[in-house]
Each structure stands twice: as C-alpha cells, then as structure tokens.
Amino acid sequence: MGGTYWSDSPLRRSLSKTPSARSNILCVRELTQQFPASVPLALVLKKFLADRSLDHAYSGGLSSYCLVTYIAI
Image 1 (tube, rainbow, N blue to C red):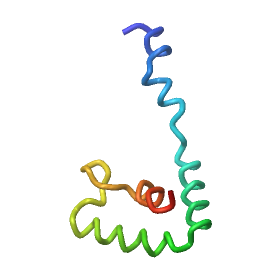
Image 2: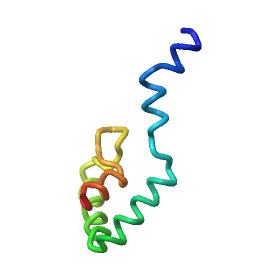
Image 3: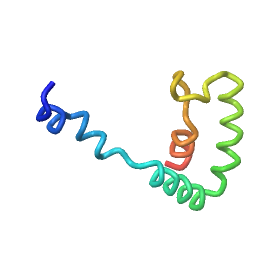
Image 4: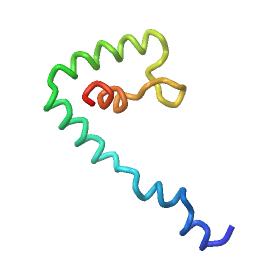
C-alpha cells in the first residue's frame, strides 16, 4: 500500500470529517439545554437498555450519545 493511496482513500476522507469528542460533548450539552425533558427520559431509557444488555454500542446496543440525539431529534 503506497502513501498516495492512504492520502486519497475514502476512509481517510471520512475520518477527517468525523467530529471530535469535544464537539460531541457540546452537541449533547446544547440538545439537553434545548430539551430539558430529554435528560430524565434518557436516564429511564438507559436503565431499560442496560437491563437488556443493550447499552453498549460495541456490542450492538445504543451509546449515550446516540440515545440523546435520537430523543432530541
């Protein structure tokens, strides 16, 4: 794999557009300020998902970030 492939690869282009953790935190903070009822709803849903082992994205569940954005949007 040459150096030119990586610089032109779709993977590199998609990774360069991925938001940073800081922007994700700011997004969640803004959404929860706009929709205050989303916080208790997210906590209830997180407990519901945890009881069913669906609270980890890496194992097929929903992450906290995903849950908050689903609720707010």
